[in-house]
Image 1: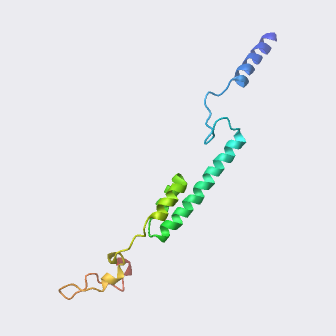
Image 2: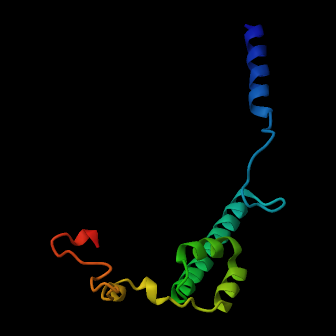
Image 3: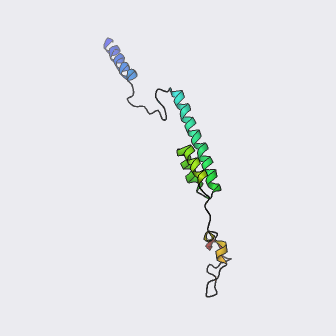
Length: 123
């Protein structure tokens, strides 16, 4: 009986008293507690969402890709907001409007892009 108790206590000591060699703590700085670390991570994530959203709104107003600017704003925060605010708006060219170019006729008298009313999915 004493041998089993000694073995059990040795196993318990090994299992419960060993430390994990590496533990990921996310965005923790120095000797933060787990609660402080979670609060800090939440603040960093929330500020990334706010700055990303602001960059996406400015990018939409300036005819730029809002999804790409959201990602840039999420990772680079205030610097990305300054950059998108300083950029000039993109001017859309006439060739991208589409419908105005359908009305033009080529030199032979036929339209370049005829519209078929029975098959509108063809363009």
